[in-house]
Length: 264
Image 1: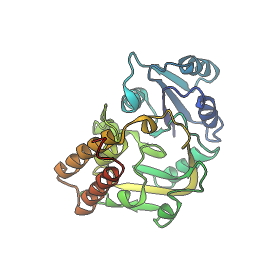
Image 2: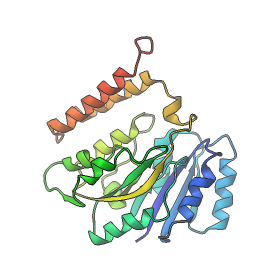
Image 3: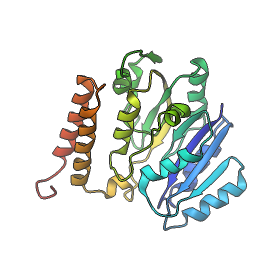
């Protein structure tokens, strides 16, 4: 089972080695590693090329113009060939057995649409540990939406091993130019995902001290405006449940609380 790990790269020269080394150190070896250089202004493009020369599993995509996180992820999806895809941000890293733990569940439940791992946050044990541990290992849902995915899985696109054919066959991509793109992505896949496997193993280390990241550099007012777009998308989605729309409203309310009147 080949897993395509897609890593968007932009202005992360300080962290990129640690990120890539964590992937190369995986004890699960059947990997396709896709580094997407989003026209990074630092030394990252050369670093990507140098790594590709060292390991044949590494592919490098050099975008012609900067398009942001969504565009970079889409570029990675276009060239991925693995049975499953996995998104990793280039300032974060994996634990040595991360992919092996997720693949073990995919092999235990053949054809599972999505496998979610646990997350360790820098300086904390885990933000999602208690939520994930309360869920069964395997969730199947035959209705119109997979509501359990909203209850059990973090919003993030990263740290999810997703069956690639589910995305390709349904033309699912990230909306470019949109902040909170992970929330929109989850809205787009939630009605397609019928089976979810959840691992309590910590499979992702999330960095919080990268002040040059997209989220750290973006005005909250812009985040709120894009949250409205996602809420409108949720309401327009004919299969969205009341619970799911309520979740989207809470997301908007949370962002509104972070915005001062001067920023709006």
